[in-house]
Length: 306
Image (tube, rainbow, N blue to C red; front, side):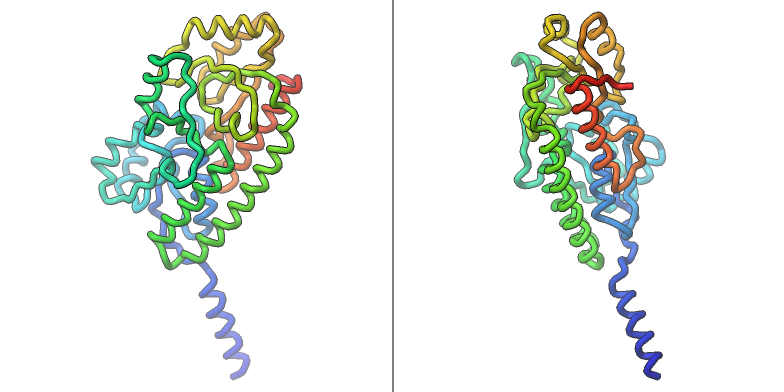
């Protein structure tokens, strides 16, 4: 009888500490955000990713499976109305019952204005994005840490039975983000004076957090054409040797970069804001940031991409 009681008590303990699967109907727009949500959810469910990391949220078209996921969604996590423009009509027609969490609304975030070269250009970019702010907020690990708290709060409210799991996973994830911030700060602190340019203005949160010297962008937004005057100015800077590196992106056509650096000593590497080629899931965010760190170090210190 004593052994039976011990066994039954152990069974109850195991049952009480194991998460129940209750949230299979969580939808997330982009892969880095999906990674953070998946890490907070843990084994309570698997969030549905809308936009594959090789695709751009600026120009994404929903698939039938996406529409089905939105129609049955209980929670939809996105960055902002402006970044995921493709989602608005789907939410109006299919996702009326879903709670939509826009992470750009997270309290205490660092929000940066777009860096346009002229008022007209800046206005053209800003009209596509909520509050006129750059929506690539997740590329700052400090912002990501604050977003995790918002994610956990939304999951706890929707699924209080698993609140303990969400809070525990959130605390672990925020600790990992603190470590990531420390590691990247230590690695990049000596590179802040080396000038470079990026394909589009999607990485200024990296620039801001780690005090990097981005001297310009080829296009201010993927929705807008390249500005001939800016391209000429950047080419002149490369020819004079004052720009040492150009970063393209896996989701965008790199031919303009290849043409731009031809005949100069400028180097080329790839920065990725979405995690292309990385398995979606809890580790994607950290692998993406590690790849970006390596790309920055290699290009600014004199190595080109392979």
